Length: 113
Image (tube, rainbow, N blue to C red; front, side):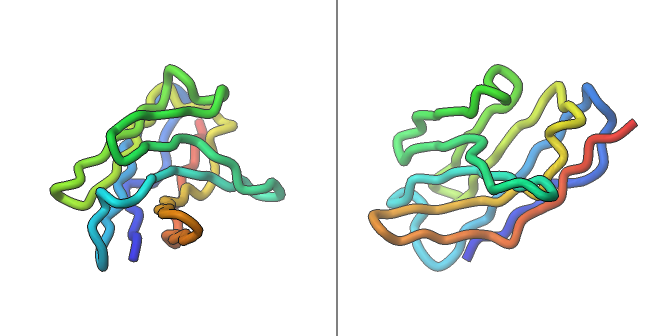
């Protein structure tokens, strides 16, 4: 089970830190990711964090968002800086191992002045 938290309303240029708490299995076996889905748009990858900590980012968030994980705590994080209006979306945590995919229910991030 994956549970996201940390979303909310923030002004452009602000920051938020999303958290994803995993239960039911050890996170270290999984590649983790953050995805988002804006109204009327398809779900898109934001960041991936491999089991060893290597990260990959969508070009739209490169240099502004930073993903991390704490395998000992079974937690994954997404630090979002310099937020822009187009970052508004529901953000989902994903855990992948082979053909197995788990998704959280998402947390809403709204960037608005």
